[in-house]
Image: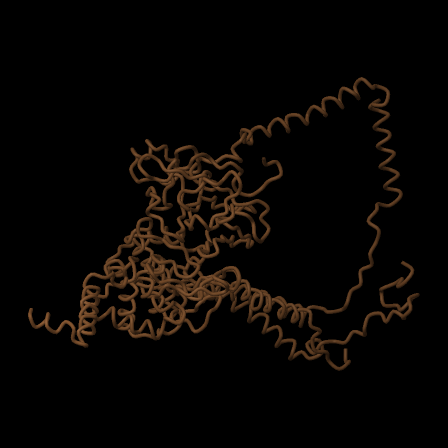
Length: 351
Length: 276
């Protein structure tokens, strides 16, 4: 730096403008007027004192206001407990902070201090001593003269890395084909989400949307039936649900432009698509029945369900996966197979 | 018969025969001929009254026989056909003031109803007479007074699965593509909520009674009512529309206050006349 050489206010500058240095230090009113000084002192102490009272008030209120009366007592429309606890503790902390700032601004010494920056390296003497000690150690241990010991030590330390890698196996079994498959399989019934009722094509109107699940993901409430159907529970259920949720929509068959090979995937205009956005996996069911578009609320990816789930807009890179529908012997809608493509967010190693 | 045979060559005989034949044919036709599609013969006064209202207020867009009017080279509907939409659709559209629409638009907004309840009833009866369609729901499914907390909870599960995607978790509504929106469902009568699910107005999909049963719909109405009548003990809910209004409030008032405090901390305070 050949410009401003010094910043300590002595005005020795080589730059285009002279270094004005620090402005002249002027005392504050509290520095020269003892009455004002005492006043500021009282202000700071007052804030700290009030904070003390509020904190004690918090402790009193905690026990004084019954805890199981949410909404019974209110202050300005707020629940009394929330309001009192929040106001006492919050304002107390605020007063401690404001008091500290007032203290620093009015009473603490306010002379500007300049601290020059120095190189962080050790002194040349220290560095010389350290290097000498290091080379003395190398000579005394004879590591240079005994390559057998040196190499075997390097080998042992190198192999020490292996256990760290091997222990990664404890993270769990490899996923196999789990990321690209779901619980859907041939003949599995499609049921209404929440109620779990199986669906007949005749129950679906034109323009209808059904948020549906495979039958194994909606407990019937009867443990025996659940076991018979193989209904999943707990974490397993949630994991499976995150990929297997679907939406059913019905449109006029002449409105459907099915991609090649998917002409018979609908049942009388009833189409089934994954409910999981192919961008980052948000559940989507913002369906517009007249345009047949479904919109993802997270990043506005828009899919055309009349056109094979093709992406119309947004960051999603793949069409919404479609599930081929069929009808079983009792007339209920079933899946003909699992999804033919990976469901959910795209990832580098997929397909 | 002699009277007829002696006068058969009278100059007026031909005319009389023709008149007689025409009357007979007309009478026979009126007895045996095809009838107009609507149930004209047994048409009740209500349907007739509804038809009169329809011809005055609705036929411009929906056609004289409610068959719909195509526009834009038959590519789109100026007003869609109302055959088979049922009384429920009429009760919803006219009862919430969406119909008659002020203009063809991206979305027809809710407004103050134009027709009286009696007139809406007549219009609904007329449209229902055109073809089978969903009827106005039974009052026992739109009355939520007898529902338990368990029913409300079940309604919440249905609401979160089927409705929140567009209408928000407390029914505050939300945006859809191209300037359309899912309206807020605040303060709506249970009957209209039910009818909206049943008929799928505008872009809203249909939720038929076979899939979301009347009892389920009743529970959904109860949940909407419950979630919106809960007082907000944490202070203003800021419209319940989530991170947009909450974020704006945090940025403007929260960060604004922090900026003011920071300015105060760094401000060069008052200085005395030089006198140290």
